[in-house]
Image 1 (cartoon, rainbow, N blue to C red):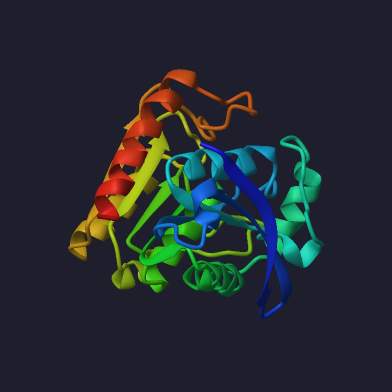
Image 2 (cartoon, rainbow, N blue to C red; image 1 turned 135 degrees about the vertical axis):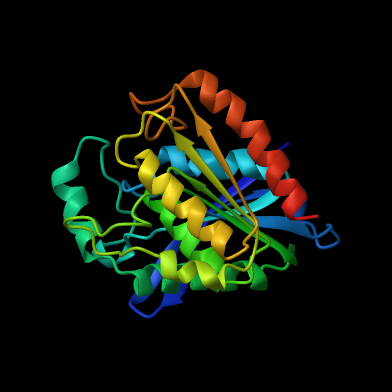
Length: 248
């Protein structure tokens, strides 16, 4: 399937924000059918090649995929190396929940206005900090489903991180939620995973939690040393199946 890749810009409360968009080729035709859509939230390194490639992979599955630049307040097209934590940390310390939700809302609005998107079938997925954003979005936007890959920071305040825990937001969860973890992820210990699941259960929210025993943090990113190929290859089709059920 041919995929169209492009950049768009939307307004946020802190100025314009660029969004990378991948669409199935038929989505450009005037008489094309409406497509499901997905917001893809970045890791802590920008809308880099890995995130853009994920947009294309989802577009190949029939989605209009949109990845907003959550670091737009630091400049357009901000990309950082996976080992460049000296530049990453100031950006993470400056971001707040309200700013991230503002960015997510602007992205959601962009998709609702896209002429070839079925507005009733919009989901979100995020990786690392993006997993946090996808979960936050699911608590405040009318999504049909949300997926968090190793999204941390939901339970405890973390040093030098601007965004804060969202357990209290769970009461507003609007859609099914999928939580994906690596058992060896030291940044999200079992106690935190259990706290999230327990709170969701107490609120009678619909969710699934998958833990990959041989994987660690960022196991799905083929560009990082933490990539765990068996887990990554297993979780991809299962995630697609989960999303398809949610978007039916």
